[in-house]
Image (tube, rainbow, N blue to C red; front, side, top):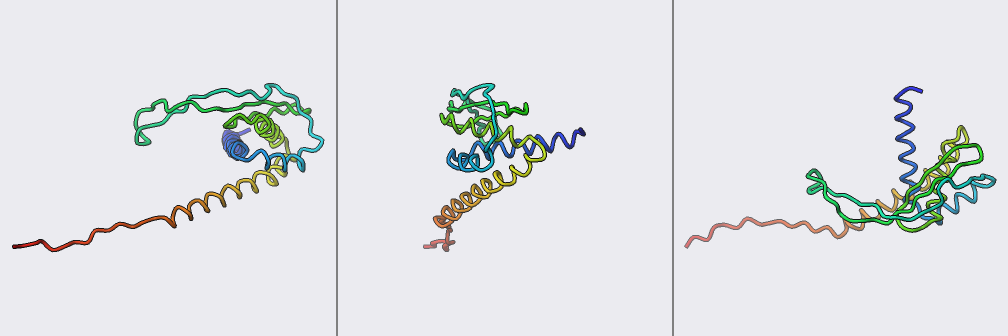
Length: 156
């Protein structure tokens, strides 16, 4: 496999894992009921919750500093065909991490994975885009433009 192909696969996987991590567990349950029927998997690492340290940068470009801890849940599964999936999600929702890991493994199978990915990731990503646009419109509606009028000098 060429380096370009590997990088594209890596970027695609990063993208779908981000969507799975942001999706609601209800959305994932809905899609799993349709796409995951008959898919068997076993836990390599059952869902477990822990803390990770988040970092920030002063001004976005300055020195890193520890911002605080965040709760995450991770999971790893292996499909019956041997494909392995991983997930890290914010919060304590064990089922969310489990479904995200199962979908990650499922998307890596070819060619069915591409078809399933199109039916799951695209609708979820579109939902996020619509929500982001709605938040942007709401924020834009409250925008206030301040301006200063130039006044003549008081000469007395």
